[in-house]
Every structure is written in C-alpha cells, then in structure tokens.
Length: 398
Figure 1: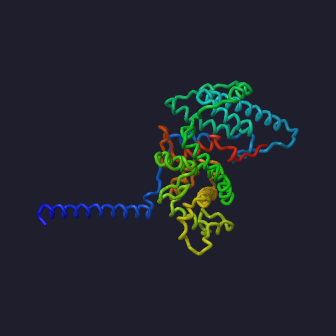
Figure 2: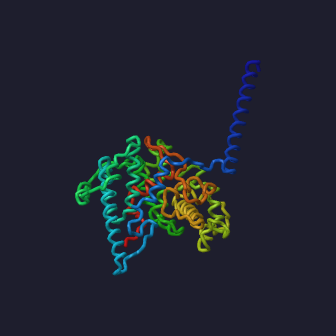
Figure 3: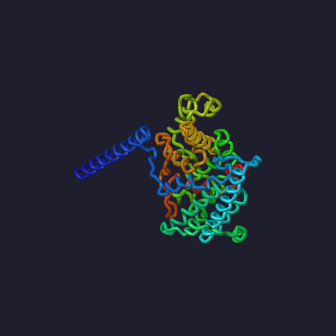
C-alpha cells in the first residue's frame, strides 16, 4: 500500500469517526432535550392578545342570555314592579342596539368576504346570540385589519349609533359564495382536513363525552395541529395525505393526530390517579386509560399513533379537561375560551399557571403569509362557523 493510499484511508477514517461522533452527540442531546423538557413549547404571546381579553368585557357578552358559559340574571317571572319593568325595557333596548351594531359590522365584513358574512348571519339567525356573534365578528375583523395595516374600517359601526336594516342585510348575503377571510380555509389542505375530521366525527364525540369537554373545542386543537403539520410538510401532504383524504401523524416526539408527546401522555395518565393533583378529574375517570393487559405503558406509543385515532383524541380531550379543571379549582373558568385552552394545549403543563389575565400565544404558525399563534388559530377556527353542523356551539337559548 503506497503512501497516498494510506493517507487517503487515514483521512477517511478520521472523517468517518468525527461524523459518527457528531451524530451520536445530536442523538444524545435530543434524548436529554426531551427528557428534561427542553423541547417543550415555550411559545410567544399573540399580537392580538389584548383584543381577545377585551372581548370578555364587551357588553355584547351580556345581552340577557345564557350562552357560552356566560350566565345572566333570569327575569322571566312576571312582576308588577316599575323598577323591574324599566329593567326589562332597558335590556330590550340594549339588545336592539347591539344587534344593529353587529349587523353594521357584518355588512362591513361582507365588503371583503360575502361568504364570511353569510356564515355569521346564518348562525345569528339560528342562535340569536349577541355574545357568540361578537366573537365571530372579532375573528373576522382581525383578519381584515391585518390586511389594512391595522387601520380600522369599522369605525362608523364602533363609534356611532348604527342604524341598520337587518332584513336587507340578511337578504343581501343570503346566497353569498366565494372565499372566506381565513387563509387556512379555501385550499386543498383544508378540504382534506375537513373530510378526514368528518370521518372521525363519532370518535371525536366519544372521546369528548368521556372526558367531559365540548367536541368543538377538541376539534379546534386537532385542526391547529393538522394545519401546522400540513403547512410545514406540503410536499408530503400532496403525495400522501391529500390523495388518501386522511389526517397526518406528527413525528416521534409529538405523536398522533393530536400531537401529544409521550412524556405528556404519561403525565395525563398519572394525573388521573393522583387525587392530590390540581388536574385530578375524579374517581369516575381514574381507570379510563388503564392498560387492561398489564403492559404498564408498553403500548402507549401504539395507542397514540393507531390508525383508528380514538386514543389520540382521548388523550387530547383529557389533556384539555385537566387544564380546565386546574383553572376551575383556582377559581378561573376557561371552559369557553378556546384561545386559552389552545395555548395551554400547545405549551404544556409546566406553563399552565392559573391567573386572572391569561395570555394567548404558543408556537408560531405561518399560513400563506398570515402569522398565527397556536391559541389564536384555535380561536379563529372555533369562531369561524366552519363545521358547525357537525360540531355545534354549546348554547342554551332562553
């Protein structure tokens, strides 16, 4: 063997040794990153966080109805009190004013997307809920104001006593078609996700009922996971998910349809058993994730990635219920705040600290040039009206 060959082999050996060492370092680093929660999503606060918070104190949220967790005084009993009569007259007057304002806002939205206005009006007519509609309007106007560089085209509706002809606006958008305001919709990715979610409707409802949460809330988090996955893996989507009309599984760190990490799944299981935990859901759910074959978690990975998706939805539903329970025990109700539930679902147990002013945020997701956080996208889907026939809003009309 000549000197040149010997030198070449030596260099090849040294390069191979360094490459092998580097790969080993990355794998070990990845293991400890997951083990010590370095990969847990820290997230960022959404730019519209204050707007979500302000919407809770808007008088639209108190329009003489029991809706979306907001309970108001029931004055349905007959009374001869003049004070009571004046109260009823004032309440009816305020509701009429709110409805006029909402229809004014809906008409402005229709200038940008008639189809979005049509969907809002359809749900308005079905529910007569000013509280719900105000949140649907907020979801739409955030998109519009983003396109207009933050300048509001809604000023006349906000600052003047809007006088609208509700019947004319209803007629104007009755048969409206076309694109919505939401960039995650009206594309091939969404059509695939929508069809796949509908295939799983029974599984979603079963998992949500077992955990005791609203199916639409579970769907909101599932859809954000899927939109995020599809927007980061477009070529894979086009080659595999789209032709088969199925949902995508996340990678080996975040597992299954809901993207639940294995370590998080273990915590969810442990919280079901630990009666001292703020996440404890009660004795009726202690055994819901037990391994009947005695495998003691050996089959957890298979559960989370199975083709039927039921366990993926169930872990996700219990995860959301545990957050809701933790905050409820601390006297803060987030049951009807999908933006907060979505944020916590994304950032995880270590970041869940009950407080009176929770922040909307989480991982950033860019969709066709529009930047979302996990929580804001959960809110936008929830109040978009999409899939409302399959996963309706939880509303009790008086």
